[in-house]
Image (spheres, rainbow, N blue to C red):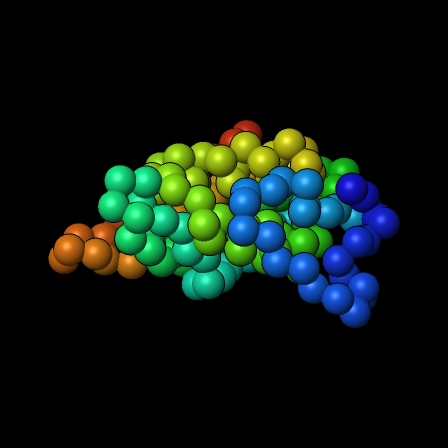
Length: 136
């Protein structure tokens, strides 16, 4: 969805507990000819281990260089919260997030970094990318 916000300013927040990329909304990039980076970070993403059902807690950082569309932050938050009851490994989750975000906003470049809180004495970081970072 572009520039027609269903979540932002609606006065009502609906949380979903099945992964739903339809929650994602975008708006027209005000500077499409200027490459610049946007970064989102949250420590409020959880999912379930697909084997044990135990909760996994993540810090997710999304960096991207927008093309024609930018991600709207409230819809992104609700999308990330929708992973809460999903059973998937960290590698699957990071790649799913990247695929869904690229599909909805078509960035020049995007990186998703997923850092799982240590469980059983070991931490896990997954970094996935799309496109070429032309700001390096």
